[in-house]
Length: 207
Image 1 (cartoon, rainbow, N blue to C red):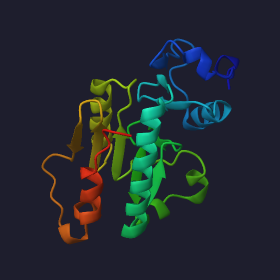
Image 2: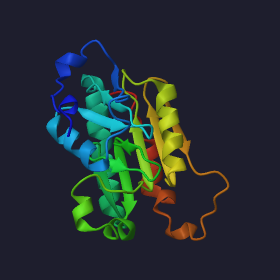
Image 3: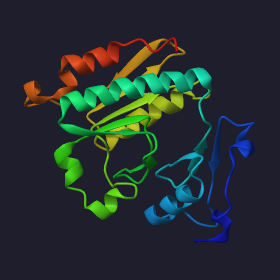
């Protein structure tokens, strides 16, 4: 890996930014999946994503209220995943190598068990090459709403079946589903079950 990519980046260096975008051109068009994984391992204190164009995006940690909302949402989500039993849940510490080239870390994600188990175990140890079936993004005070909406559309373009963008600032939950798609087995769709509906309706406006 090039020395240009090796130095660690500390949260203090990001104090004046909401997000920091690193452009690799003209030194390098984009990192490979293995290079990006290594870069993230060298900067474990940071949450890092990469666009399909190869730009790296480094995001600030949430504030106190945002962190509390995230904690409560993660707990409720984990309870639903366990009760449902048909899939595997993830928090934002994992990165997914999406089919169209981006590397994303949604706040919460869910993958059907059979899809997850089809990925070779060695690939699961890094950033798995898959788009989750269900993704959740929780807007924090430093997040731009337009950017988050574009990210939700990106998830759908890569194969996600459901996306929730929870916006405590605007007190709204934006629901994303692929257009003109029919579920042939609605009774077996965990996204339509009461537990998931209760999770979507839960109030996260106040920590």
